Length: 180
Image (cartoon, rainbow, N blue to C red; front, side, top):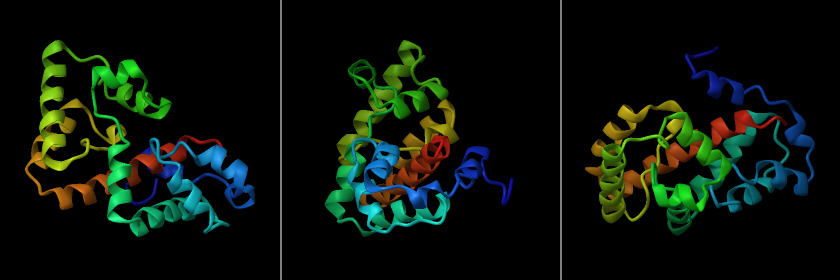
């Protein structure tokens, strides 16, 4: 492992060069679900192809997000589910979101814990206009709750920037899980 990266982040750097050889349809089919309900990120990244490797591909995705309009970045944030939200879980999360929330035990909370998450989610959305986004795979329940409380106090512009940083981490880990 180099530079102390989380093992899953390191795996994201190991995906082969098949990325560069994919046609548009295959590219969209393979990577289209990396961003919750926001395939436009992957669609725009296609225009930057070919990519030498997974790291270059992920940089392309991040570039699309960085070049997106403020409204598009806000839509990207709003496309994410709230954490530990029973309604979202009942309606159906994307497979990736469901696995991520399960990995942190967010689908197995006590009634009091669900209430805490619900209250923080509601306060966060009311203040910032989008759901709290964090790379769940790199956190546990305690660190997620601590981050929710701390980030609730930030201004909305800074929070949108942080949300996009977290989207980048989430997509990098999801990319590592793809067997390209």
